[in-house]
Image 1: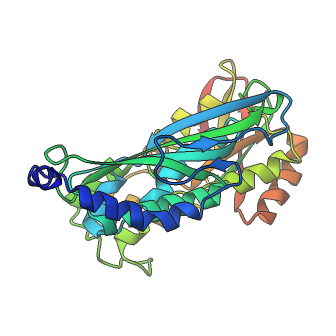
Image 2 (image 1 turned 180 degrees about the vertical axis):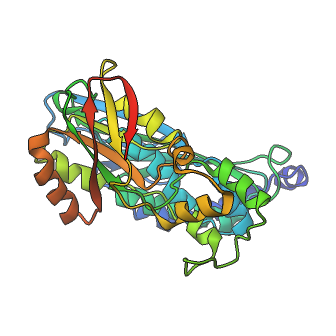
Length: 341
């Protein structure tokens, strides 16, 4: 039967081989609360050891988007799994939760075990960074749905938080400070535009352009930063009023989600360091900074909203956690996002 299925484009034996190759990576993510191992119908996670008064499970799901097309072009598959975990985990961090476990879904045109292993290695790397156990997943070989070299990724994370300490933005008030934490680059948003710019301006992913010391493709594939440890460190000492994960839509779409509807934010442009990749894209594609703000994170991957009196301590904690951070703005009584220079 497996030979008949193989003739239809589904290689069952390759699937078994992929599972064998990924086991060592999955095992790196293990937590004591995980029950059972790889191969069961469902992942099990024991919550009995937690001592929350009012525990709330917090879930998130996301993908990597068209950044994957660059991974195909570069034949580099060991970092997009980190992106997958980061996009999911950073969303639940924004609600004040800590990640417990993660599940992945890989859909591909052809199951190439070594390629699948590289993807799962990246997912495991991200899970280790986030403190999440990789307790399940699905690899679906779907010939005819995807090209032989193509795949898509989806991730699912579940975290936990004390109900009274979850962050909804309800405590944000006029005059609160906004602290931006540095991104690692483009993260996982805006790549449809980036790919179009590459095509329009004849850029090569394999070429090393000034001021970089690596090929452009490697710069663009730099994985999304996971902010678990840094935000957790701040949470332990500071009352964070709001958190915004700066993803698709940039500041315009994401900062308003972290404040009440009757408040807004004022962002001081030039108050943080703009990564070189954005300078490069603006120069090559003749874009203006204002255009970038509505698409990309422009160097700020996550923003924390705290009381003015907590700014200095928050900055110290972030620096001790190894993060670069800047005071980039403030909350105002005028709705929307305002930029000043």
